[in-house]
Image (cartoon, rainbow, N blue to C red; front, side, top):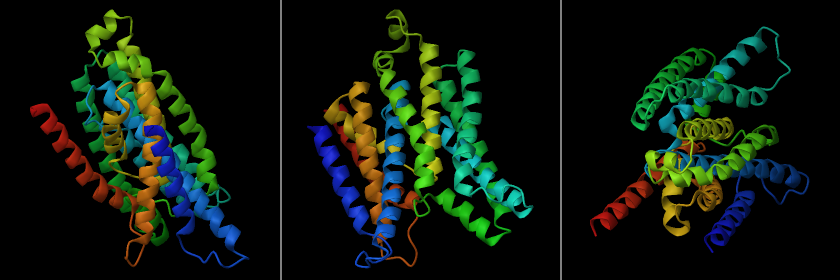
Length: 324
């Protein structure tokens, strides 16, 4: 039943998303173009939301903490920095007549993936060295601070050129306004592979919920599980950032909200978070378009305004259940 409700909610949000946006669908000559642009946007929202939702469920299972999110590993900040750096490098190369024929959106996913994997390489090096969960959290915090600082430096360089500065800032704030079918085609394989891997690693993650010592006694290679789960979370995060930039709270709120309804078993939770994350982000994108502002509100701002109070409400409910 939860899956049916989530699927119906996603279908309803997708239908509304196709009806809302710039342009008049009554114009027969441009109707197909408008619908294609809106369809690409809603597909991008569903891919990014589903990827972040599943990544959040995997991270929360890995750290045995329902309050964890993909950003704690530093991969989100790394992917964002990679995307910013690629936009800056592409602009410089295009100005010099090099790779001017390559659109920025074609190289943006590569930059996000490279940034995420730069963060992953550091994390995986510590995993091989036997770092415990607390050490990984501290390393992720340090990497996040480092990549955010580097991203701010890139933004400072980019604002010297108006169009480039706007593109980098818009990417940093998060949004789906520029998403086209190129973004969808490039990110879809990463999301599909990452989601399949998340489902396949569901059983080891279930065992890890009982504790690392218990999991090891039951035959789970804890270090190997950490390594692969972290790697696939990085892939999903990179794909989501490449589509929508920095988008907060999806990977934190969606798994936490759905766990009471579908349970903690990851092979049930991961598909539910894919549907829930896709519906949540697509709905936030609709809200970003209809807010009465002079310009379209950044999607990352909308998810933060909705996700933060929702997360606090879920946290209060969880504390009451613990006390009771």
